[in-house]
Image (cartoon, rainbow, N blue to C red):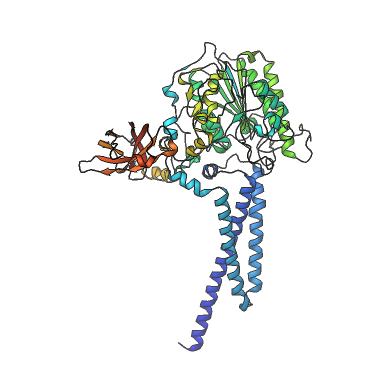
Length: 626
């Protein structure tokens, strides 16, 4: 081969390499810009976003999402990314003949793109505290397992004449918006009618003439999470590897919700919302638990209750929702059976809400304050209408915010030491309070409290993780403290893992399609693990006792046995011990009092089996005294 041919070949090879590198730079830069803009848009749109919510919605269908929000993403992220990509292509075409600077230009763009992507991911990582979330997902707590009260194990006694229930979820409504004198955090009360409703009725503030509300715990800080928490007394925490709610035929089929309980008691149940009920799995949840009739935006459109093609904000505005609700209540009251009408407003959704034509500009350019004030007035007028109806005498009204707002700036002046809680009010309850003190509670407590407000007698006064606030029994927040409860609920739970074990992933669905014929008729293998658990007497000389696990029986491969130990019910001091296998198939571990500062008292011991896939299963538990 001649030197000229070799030179031509090298030149072609160099051009190909430069071309490949150019395409790579353009792709990397485009992805970096889209990632950076998307991260900025996400954090700007969802102030207070949590990893629990993000993980949930990343694997939930976008059906029913507000189209304005989608177009905002397109304009803020996709459009700008497209423009940057085109400009970069033009720059490459223009500079390609300038070989001396072309390579440096591409290298500079590549470096800047990598820096941009890294900074963006780092910002999201820090803002959402992904490290803490990851740690919580890898750490198990027995808090939920130990404190959850399954409604199946509780005797519920309804009054002879069953009361009707109207449950109104108010989107993003907090007691924060009231004035400081009333327990809020604003100088001016922007929800005066709701404030007055709370003072005249029940928010469990005792003799305090201020508002009180529930803490929104982890797993209950977005709409479907909040509705789930207030209906079941559980957080909507789904392990990330199982978070595929858009593929499901049912929503947590093994839990019992207030809808299930009222359905069994003969209630007619309806969910009314002004948006698409499919969004976030709301329709699936309410149809799976209580067989609710769904009255949403799609229902209104299909039945010509709104003009053809009509759509504002997330569907139709709240003023229409309340008018539809009046008609529905009149219809339900004419039935022979008690009813449960559950509603969800939408105008107060972030960002800045939807200011309908009936909302006055009481607060000038502060649109969100105008929307909140309008919602306060509309809810109050709706309650007044209900109170004038013949069915009101035997009807309880519950008004609760779903979660604290995620609006980017509405609460930016709220003092850091002020604790934001959702608005809560019980009206015309069918029971009396046993305690007249300012209660500390979470939205989990709404579950049993709502049943009690219908005159239902609850054995033990607890359901789920909630406590009947009309009773004198302490809530979990009052027993353990809000901070500790929040911390423990953020961690993984064997109970939650069990409840989510049958969630089908996309991969599972593919496997089912491939093996549907060969596996037809076979039932899913459930974990069946038993063992005898004992502990010897505490040795004061050595400062320890030994836990023994024997006669282990399991229908699946076990890779290890762990013991969770904590003193005097204080799970903040929980320590995990790995057990040592003995030659006869038994296990044992030594528990040293020095690990707990030689604290005296009753020690709780829970034994878990870890299968070959790393899934934990609670075998049983015992107590030991020191």
